[in-house]
Amino acid sequence: MMMMPPPAFYPPPPPQQRGSFARVIFTTLATSIFGLSIAANIYLLILTGFLGGSGESARTTTLISGDIKQKIAVVPVTGVIDEGTAERFEKTMKRLENDENVKALVLDIDTPGGGVSASDEIYARVLKFKEIKHIPVVVTVGSMAASGGYYISCSADKIVAQRTTITGSIGVLMPRYDLSKLGEKYGVADDSIHSTGATYKTVGSPLKPMSADERQYLVSLIDDAFATFKDVVTKGRGTSLKRPIDEIANGKAYSASEALQMGLVDQLGYRNDAYDLAASLAHLNNKHVVKYEPIQSFLEALGANDSKYSGGLPSANSGGININVDTAHVLQELTTPRLMYLWRGQ
Image (tube, rainbow, N blue to C red):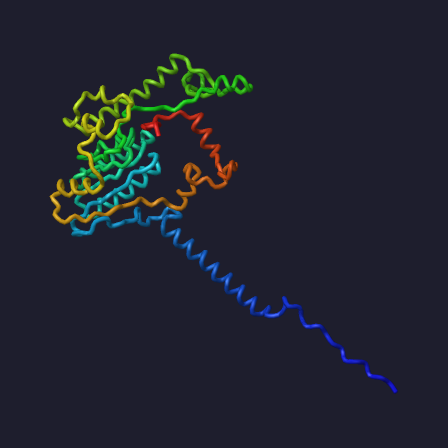
């Protein structure tokens, strides 16, 4: 008698195959949601200036609620002043010029200064704003309004400094580093070629010793910017100055009490004191104080010139601290002399 073969038994599918359809559905949904999230964020970035669009120039925060038609606009000027600072400031000023409810402007300054041209642009922009709006401008100073920061402050009608403020530093700086001996040691020399007769074209090279004539040439450029600075202070402070400008403009940074004695500031106080002073000058009885913070676009935030955003730069880790080195920026600093209204005491 022929025996029938036993029925075949197949092992159950491996655990990882169970529920595979549900897993596919879940993965698809998660991927779709993630993709939609990325698309939505890109869209929002475009709206806020990812591509340099014409969105809002500043975000606003109401500091003191009052009559909306008695608005005091507060605009911060912080950090080292550069061309980006001036560009963002310009956008905010245009917005304020078109707001008929703005009755006074308060510049909230906390900066060691910066570029000569950028500082002058902001100063001139405030003067233009005053001509257009015919409203009072008051400066309130935080920890410092030094050099270019004080230059800008001189555009205001009144300056209020905190008792811990450092200000002044009226002078001009051209950073330069003499690396000629280091170059000799390692066999590195500046072999730049200039056009015939343009002997001053290579002045300022860190790898070449500077002659007396070359130094005098650079000093003449610095002194011209210095004369402009002193003129700005003299015109801005007027009869408030208690000493001759040449006694004050010696590059020194002053404490708030010293600045008050010299007439560089009008009173000691805090931000609220500056708001009250602005309201008094504008004859407001129910002030509405709004802070306008300039918006840095996404592309600006990722700009290579901004030391705060150093992604992709050479880095090293020491003791758990990650150190980024902006090589291009350092080389530019070493090889490109520039005039600065900047206090380097911090």
